[in-house]
Length: 406
Image (cartoon, rainbow, N blue to C red; front, side, top):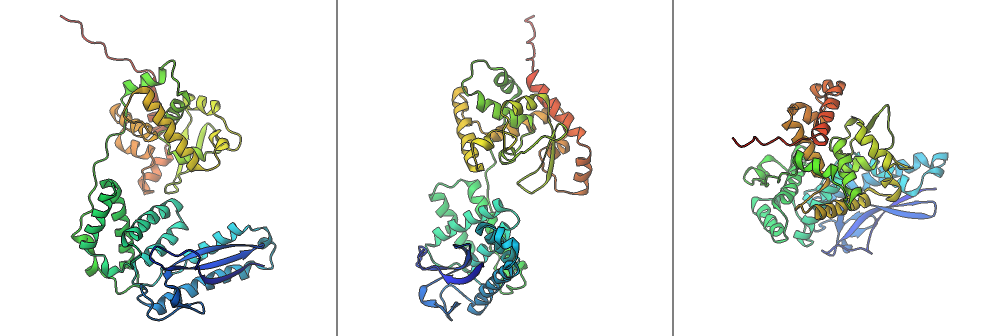
């Protein structure tokens, strides 16, 4: 029989000397935990509740209501499963996931603590998009490091605080674009709090981003010319042929994202069909002969490509691809080469040979699921034609002859 209870995790204190409040799940003689958005001093935990006047918890009653609601949700999930055949089949990980999803349906934590609210916001994101939740988690952990364990309330998020946080990131070597991501995440959480009826104390009057502008650098161009790609495709005696093949497979598949490439499973009627991990949009790409040849060369058993047999998780494949592209760049004596260059090069070449911006946008999956995008998706022939034109432009490239001296 599965069980759940609230407890204060006294074995893993935070840098600020606080202890996380967690749900402990028991199932099949094993245990796991789910973290709530709260971490408090040990002396302020009593009989499964946060004591009054707890530092960093502006509204203790609301915080206790929130953790009790999470416990109630978890208990409800377990009570519905206990005594059924399903509970015997579920692993502890499966059960934990079901409880996390149930708890994510709760209202965001009712607290004046920005970090508490941000963690609850992250939990909600995790239920629909794990990668997006991870990005918010990176921002939250940076804030925790900057705060050195001190609480951060919504009222503390002033222009002055944002400037100090920005300087701290600069001193850590973070680029303008990296810092821009962190500030956009903070702004998104603040906007959610303003719209949250359970947080009437957070208003537009507190909004610091009217006077603080999020800056970013223009991303350097990451594309190669037709001439360069033609020479690379036909180059003899290359040592890093597998890296070149991976680069061109991405290119032939219209700059497919690396994570989507890793999880491809099958070919359907001469096309690959999948939902993008980023955003969940359905995608369909016709396999041109050049792409099909590479798929056959690197055919896998469990997934479409053998990378899924060699590497069980995507992060391993990502590290391999990054290293392979770096070695290929070194062999070719170019400053930088990543898998993104395949995607950017496809778009640049498509534009240069006359493919419309709308078709390029659709081909790269930048649609917003508007009515226009739905009609574009219905006519995949435009995208198929554009991809064939881009591939031909590279493979069959012929340099223009210089005019003879008169």
